[in-house]
Length: 186
Image 1 (tube, rainbow, N blue to C red):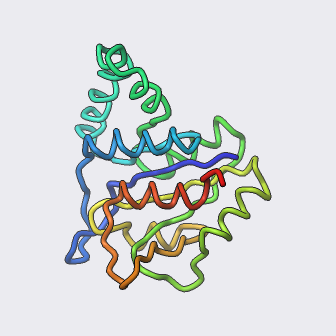
Image 2 (cartoon, rainbow, N blue to C red):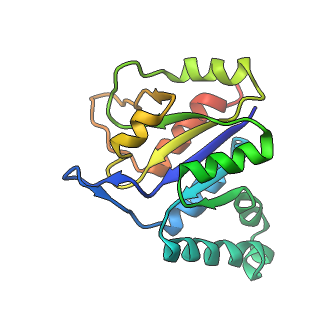
């Protein structure tokens, strides 16, 4: 099975609905890479076109991959070995194609319900039916993915719903919940 994650920092929206670029956070680098490693995700892409944000991400990763951090915490190093940095989803798609010979199926995520969304069961079937097909779950930062990403996605995954309709999870929580629903051992 080839499941990838992409955390998009541009284009995203803010709470007023404006297009923004969000900042990469240390928590997102570490926590999502650990969840990805736990569930066997092939690679986790941090998507930002901002060179300074890419440098920030590389500096953190280098500390754990090549510096003293990896000696101090080998499991953190192992989790970060699956992280890639890309300027946009097209670049991430080319990396996936270059390594695996197939373009990924893009699955957007959102806290909003969109028509024709697929649920986790339907996506799980896709993963199981063609284990050689790369599938990339795309997550947004800020207040979510920009509509242009949603419209370009091959599918949109139904939002996570709690008990009373309130839904404003951190992206780290959403990634972990979706991974568990899709990949957990029974």
